[in-house]
Length: 97
Image (cartoon, rainbow, N blue to C red; front, side, top):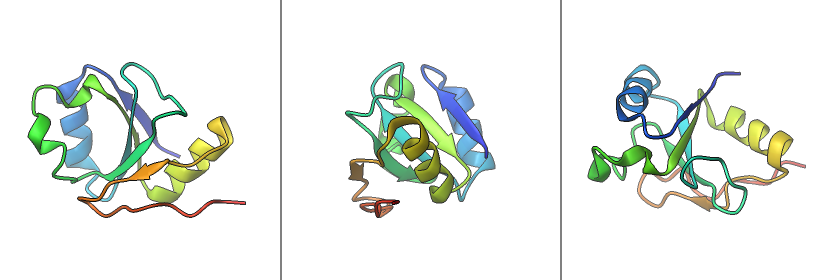
């Protein structure tokens, strides 16, 4: 599994986006992954483009695929993203049982 975390690292996050066009990132609370706020996006989601220079104010937790993101979140936090992005249509994710 490939997992990277970006917080206050715009250049690092943009590099990750460019190198992982099929990847998925999870937005969460500033500075940490918080089970109370987990939003999934495709790597190329245009919602992030609106926040150039401040995209990593909310922490970005990046994975090579949606299935890796799901497995990581279930294993470490017992839950999946609570909200899926309406722009990139990663959508509401099905529960893993």
